Length: 239
Image 1 (cartoon, rainbow, N blue to C red):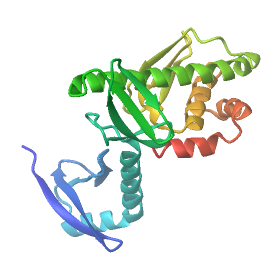
Image 2: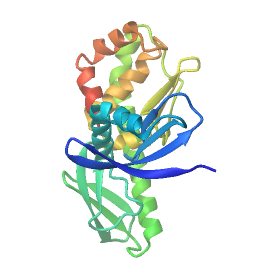
Image 3: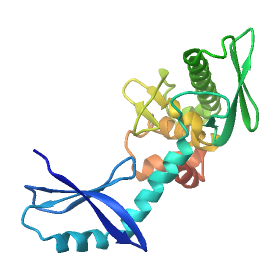
């Protein structure tokens, strides 16, 4: 049976909670989970003092990793349910939802607001369904538009025409490419990031039709279409 102890440690003048577990392992391991919590495991024989010294030696890494997780969580804005006043993020901008009773179901986007016109304003399932469909359609339209712009450049460099586009929610990737069959797949959550970052992901996946790995040659193709791709990738990593 696992025995996990909750502890605290002082890093840069602030106390951080962490979960500590002793196991039959050879080295001390430290991990920042996707929710920003800290987990540490250590061999049975090592002293608490040595464990604490190890954690202190990783101070900069821990703080930077937690800050990145917190920034991503702040930027994602993926509420479980949608209602008036709910904040969401579309194309990199925070927008506020307003529900409007209507004789048709539709979503209208402005600079700072999203108006969800709904037949039954008290039906939360219908509201979520209408919003999520609009969100998905919005991303599809944007991806296909960008693809139509960059595809001629990649064809000129020798890439094949993609055999198809797929969309699904992915936990750890914004997009993927199967060079063998030419399928490009994109994460629905891309709708949250700035449009230039969406363009970078599309270009990235098209470049895999030329080079299947992430070698220097691959990034040279990316740079030919988007010279400032590094900056776009840096911003993308904040989401």
